[in-house]
Image (cartoon, rainbow, N blue to C red):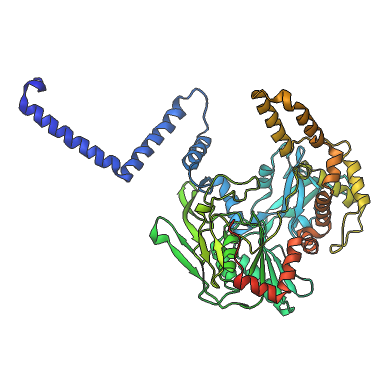
Length: 558
């Protein structure tokens, strides 16, 4: 029987259709339904691709690609951490692992010791910067990437590690056997009293228990009679939030609000106040920051500024004000996802407004005035959001030229430092060492036959201008001028070695010092020379200037 000839049946079917459409519409608008539907589609895609795609597919790689796709339009910090990467994630957050205790880097077909940690198993076994690893536990590592060799070197503390190495100083191959240990990489690689009365702490990351190291350092230096303190957070990418709160609790009264976080799930919102009695609420403090100071480092810097508890020096910080949490997703994999934003005591969010567009060095790009909001510190000073924390005393950016970075990346500076180390076994004075002009001339001669292939940004821009001029038919008119400019900025290795002599000498000096005095020696060496440290000392030793900054000086808007 045809529905179109039976009026009753027609109306019944129409009513049923309307009801069905309504149900589907309601279900489709339900987020849980949408989630379930899309999970089913994704599962079906995996199954069909795995079964029928023309080439063999690695399901693990396909999952990682799918995870990257799901998070690509979110913030840069939400990501899947598969089981094989969890060990590295734990090392990053705790600073602890089982191994030999040394940094390594690629050197041609092998891996080289870049830095043994002082008193680590590698150090006690006699490994030095420049030693080349040939075999690990009887297996040749020729052609292996650093990440793979690193995994081979790590293991359960107490297990045996067999290495074959080519020693830098003798050129001979040697076999070494020693036990792995529990390695603890302190977030505080160096602290000391400098300039007679100023405490100086280098703080590299907010790993587990780093606050205890800072507390011990501050207590020790207070006993030595320091009259001011520098906390160096340059290059500190952050870490554990609670460690930042503990560090701030040493310098502000108990019960002081130092950071809050707010997100979509209101039950996860939290305000953090200091829980312990401070060490010293009066000692002048200078905090050093730069464009690589991020996350927990910005929380500490922002709180010092908002509470008028210290002076900030350097460059605007990175601008990462997002809170990440880890959630298990099965099979020992975790999803690290952003769940909230940080806010400093004044109410500022330090997150850069634009996640994706940054300067070449990773720093915050230009922020329109209309998007920048004004806040006030405890004393009423003006501070601003828009991305990162702006220092009270802005220092010039201190970046190496692209030419110098190429020299370092190719290993030429390290190779020359190795030659110096072999030749000068008597050591160097960590406080007063400076590469002489004669030694630098030796480096210039060392570079004579070394290829340095790079194109400066100026040359890249000139090439683009030439292409556009040709397309717009202006090239005939301006080609002479372009050729003249090109002649002046052309790659000239010898000219660049002289033009960037100062910064190249600094890098070579650091590489030489580390071979005799470890990373701690480099920090001590630079504390006598660093312009930002020297400026911080001046401020801390000038009570009137320090007081004026923390009570009445506004920060720059941008």
